[in-house]
Image (cartoon, rainbow, N blue to C red; front, side):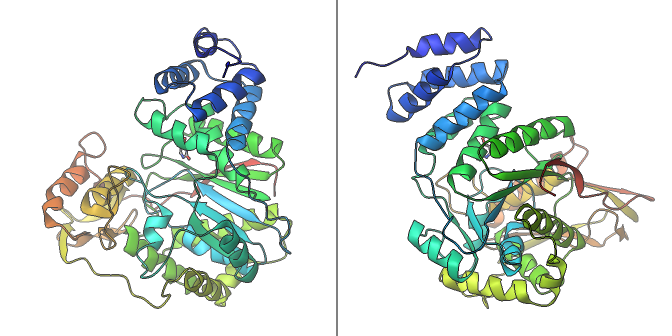
Length: 436
Ligand code: URA
């Protein structure tokens, strides 16, 4: 087949700071997906994009081209509106678990296509797979049927959705080009737009445990994604939320399921409850529902009922208790005082090294591994109190987990105890978008 463009011309245009045309973008994304543009050429283009950036038109076209590489789901025949949430990933971020059934209990269907964890941030599917029998893979028809009958589904994205992104993301991962905002935004939004949701709320994490360490970068990413969604006809908004401290007390797959069920039962840590309700309000508002209070649906058990039906519909046992780790070690307070730092990255890497996360895509994860925080930011401790318990199925992992805790914050350590200090500041740092 004669190709419409030459890959080298496209690379050189971007390398020299030029703007790619719509035809060039459509061609290069399609040709890369078919194998007519080689990995080394695409990695060179990705690096040029990282260094030179893309304008709004280029990013929108790149996103469209990635959507066009695969199928698009359509939920427009459902009798209720649809809304989804995407988090850029954080430590202890189990919010999807209580949020999806909560929003469904308030009358909006939630088609939540999720992923597995890579690195120190956990994956929603890994968490749910701690529930015996629960199945992540559903056909498009099963997903549709469950949305109609239960109102919420959390499942794996099929291979038909934005295959160009799958290939490009794997390449970016090994070529130092993950951090390019046009590529992150188009990667996330191509999948979310192809998924067919009517409303999308983005939870863009900011802080040590997040992809975006500073607020200005996070704002730029959020604004780029909100523009992409809006231009594609999806009601899109973003909350920028604090990820300098882990969310809640349980970090690790089974621990996060347990904590989510506590939230659904009307309890749970205040920060997890607060963010769940804020995101639920944002999703409902995007769908035009402002007269239903999600806090009530949490308190009166409606969200819990939907959770139980959602888990059962995918073969899981909603009454199962999560496994206890066979090996535990405690981390003790070294002085009296108030915890003024509980660094999200330190805790996230420790949980990952204990077996909660994976280093390579093929690695298994442990259901019971992770970190439980008995004490967190702003809480008072006495010397010798247990601050956290480390859990694992493979005790040879303890040393590296403890090293992660000690190495965090440039070697100053994950936990800081001072004479006095404040608790957690606001969780929501900013909001971008038009949906109210
Ligand atoms: N998540 C994605 O899906 N893509 C990115 O590029 C980064 C995070």
